[in-house]
Amino acid sequence: MAEPAKLGVTLAAVAAAMALVLLLAGLRRGIGDQTTLYVDRQAPVLVGQQGVRNFIAQPSVLSDALAGRVASVDGVASVTRVSEGYAMFRLHGQRVLSLLVGYDPGRGGGPWDLAEGRRPARAGEVVLDRVLASSHGLAVGSRLTYRGATLRVVGLSRGTAGWMMALGFATRSFVNELNRHPGTSTFLFVQPRPGTSPDALAARIDRAVPEASAVTREKLAANDRDLFVGAFNGPLLAMVTISVVVAIIVIGLSVYSSTIERARDYATLKAIGLAPRRLVVLAAAQAVAI
Image (cartoon, rainbow, N blue to C red):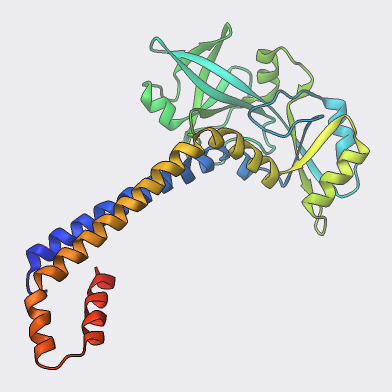
């Protein structure tokens, strides 16, 4: 504390090194969290076409009749149908990728937090993520074209800007019409009855409805993270490792230079009787404090 300028420079160097570590580690964690931000808010069990193990990477088509069979399985409290698919919007001369989710009004699967406007109620109405909307000058009342249909923005959602793409929401019947799959859904969100575990219910649905695949929300989200984050995992881990090594070197050099600069002080303390072990403890305490 006797030389505040040197202390400030040392602390700034250590803080910068640690900030680099936290930034890269947070980037890796954030990619995983944003990849599954929609699935993480849905029912504990998801049902898709047979063999499906990912929500946003594999095609899935389920008939509405199959949803009724799933609903009759013992332990099922409710079934919510959604139809989702990638939508490539053309905005300001750019192609913007979005995941368009169709849900039944009054049921689950829609936007969980509206920043402005209302939820879609009829064909042609859509709710867009507000980050996507602000990036392209869209607001409530704006119109855009997709697959020959005119979409009118009736609401802006908050917290739906996923990694690489934002979420959009419309009625399920309208999304089915756009995707040319009337009377179908891509996934069923299944809520178990109290006392029924998601794992047990998923196994029960697999036995009762063999042409479909039931997966717990945690397992499906983990599969999506492995698929999308796995491609970046190696480089990100290498960068985090390098930043940790750099942080250790910066801290080591800072403590070393600080100790060398006080060599005369340590020599004086030793001359008046301070034991070598106490000197080491003193230098180590300073390093730990920094």
